[in-house]
Structures are given as C-alpha cells and as structure tokens.
Image (cartoon, rainbow, N blue to C red):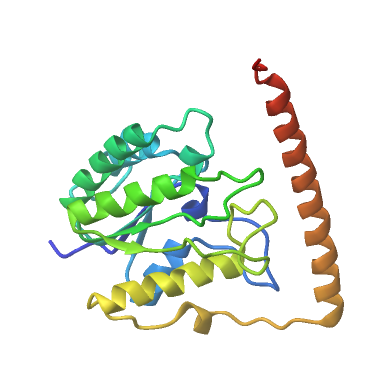
Length: 241
C-alpha cells in the first residue's frame, strides 16, 4: 500500500482556523505544507491539546476515525508543547515521557517525522524559561527517534503572531509552512509549490491603519490582563521573614 500523505497532530496552532488576513484564510501550517508537497492531508490536531492528548486521544483516533486505519504516511507533523508549558503543573520529565511515546508511535506510521520547537516569546504573561526546557526536550526526543526539527524559537512579530503571542496569523501559518518545506527539501522531499505562491492579497493604507489600531487595542488588553494576573500571583505567594 502506498504512503497516505501528510498526518498532522498537535493543538490549535496545527488545527488552524481564525481571522482572515488581507483576505487570506487562516489555514494550518501543516495543510499548507501538504499542499506544497502535493500530498493528501489527514488532520487529527485539536484545540487546547497537550502532549498527553496526542498520546491518549489523537493517536488512538487514527484507528477509530480513519477510513484507512492501517495507513502509513509520507510525513507526520507534530507541533505540541505550547499548552504544556503555559500550564501551572508543567513537568519536563512527564512531557518527555509522553513525547517519547508519541514519537514511538509515529516512527512506525510515517516515513518522515517533523517536530516543531516553540517560539521563545510565548504568551502573555510570558511562559518564560519553561519554553526552552520544552525545546530541549523536543530536540532531544526528535534526535532519539530520527525525526526532523523545525526551529521556531525566533518567530515573533505582529505580522506572524496574534496579539496573544501564541497563535499564528494567516501569514504566520504560511511562514511556518515555508520553513517546514525548507527543512523537508533539505532532507530530500520534493517541493512542488511554495505556499506564498498560492495566495493573492493587496494591502491598502486605510486597511493598514485600521489593522494597526485593532492590534494595538488587543495587545494592550492582553498586556493589562497579563499584568493583573502577575500581580495576583505575587499577592498569593506566602511572605518570608
């Protein structure tokens, strides 16, 4: 049986969906990647997912919700960890155990696996040092299982990330796909079309001003909420002395 295209696991970033950006639909980076490779796409990512959800829900769903449960894939995309590091109960060791189990399962399902690291400037309030802890785990487990790694540590900025500093914009999803395809091309996969060549858009001065104002408002709102949460957390901490 020939390979069955691109399999995608992860959270809302890989699930995709959201606001248009200059008329460009917000679609998953993994879907854009599949289109760039000219391959069928099988999405199993879900909003709010953690690595435990990948292991306990998404991987089992391959057998329950697929017309070809025995299918082998050309490529498996796994972008997970954002919700893990933003949680109060973050544990690097537990994250590594579950991530290792996910890669174990994908190694027998896909010819290539692509793991994705997390942008360092993640969230408001910022996730902080936990992000690099997770990235070290992601790279270590990927190396252990012979998976490729797409490094997004430096991804930041209004054009590619929403005001929450977590979710990519429509252009951000395209940017991730372009980087993913570069990694895959370097490993020998044939890229048939670049995602940016599949979209058409035109900006206007009025639209840019309106967009700047909307982003500034949303960013200020997020920042104020983050500052309030930080103050509340400090107030709850027991005093020493």
